[in-house]
Length: 77
Image (tube, rainbow, N blue to C red; front, side, top):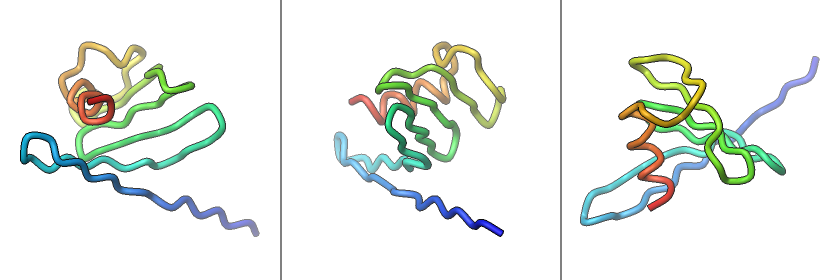
């Protein structure tokens, strides 16, 4: 039996006196999965390639969903 544990890192950033939090769920050589309470985002070499959200489910394109766009704003601003 093999047990693999992935530790979540939480990053908190103060932007305009508002606390913003997201978690890095997985970080590999090329891929990174980041999530918050509303959405998850898959990054390949730092660029968003896929996403999921609580309201719409899986997205082929990470653009156009307000939940995912809020997460991207937290990450990239």
